[in-house]
Image (tube, rainbow, N blue to C red; front, side, top):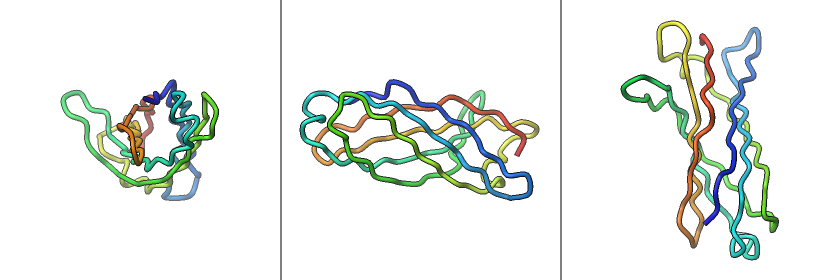
Length: 120
């Protein structure tokens, strides 16, 4: 089964806009079968507010990727959301993205990015 080696989140916040770009970079390590088959994956992106007792689900979207035939593949995804969606705490908000990969014929795998803090 494939694994997510690293998953990093960074924010691009325009000075005058109400939108935020969530820049998601992850390195996937494919197993031999996945490399040879070039499978396509539906990817679910879930944005969460990182809280002490229970994380808040803030946003969901979907995209598709295809295995590149190599052992490692660097995936870059930009998800644009409204600042108001990410404003879930008093003071600084802490957010992360959960990535869920659903292959058409194999078991799903998932991972989470780092937490980013910003006052939205």
